Length: 172
Image 1 (cartoon, one colour):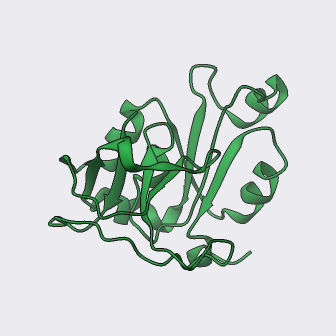
Image 2 (tube, helix red, strand yellow):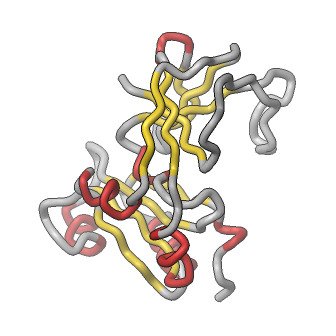
Image 3 (cartoon, rainbow, N blue to C red):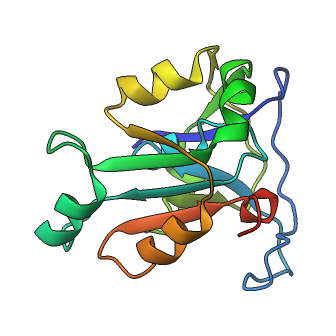
C-alpha cells in the first residue's frame, strides 16, 4: 500500500506528529496524516479549494452510478467550483510518499491513515498539471458553480465520499 501527504510546500524533510484540530479526534496525541492511493485524487487540488469527492465501493448501487457518473468507465469524481479552475491550473503540488509500516487506518471511507511517530518521506513527486494527474487516474473532474447541492445529494448515496474545505465554498 502506498501512502502520501499532499502539500504546496516543496521542501518538507520531516513530518512531526501534530495534535488534531478535528473535534471528533483524541487531542492527547499528535498524528502524522497520510492518504491512500485510492483517495489521493481527492487531494490533488490547491489546499483550500473546496471540493466534493466520491467514489464507488463494494456496496455502491447501480442507480447511484447511473445518476452521478457521466461515464461507465469511471468510478470516482472530484467536483470543484468555477472560481478554482484557474487557481488549480497554476498550482504545483508535492506528494510526499511514506513507508506505510508505521501507519494505521483512521478513516476507511476517506482513505486516511495516521502515524503517532515522526515520519521522513521516502519519495517526493512533483505535480505541475493537477488536471492531467487526476485524469490519468481515471477520475472525472466536474467544475460547477456551487458545491452545496451536490454535497447534500452525495451524502445520501451509497458512495464513499469526502467533502473537503467546504468552509471556503460559495454560499448557496
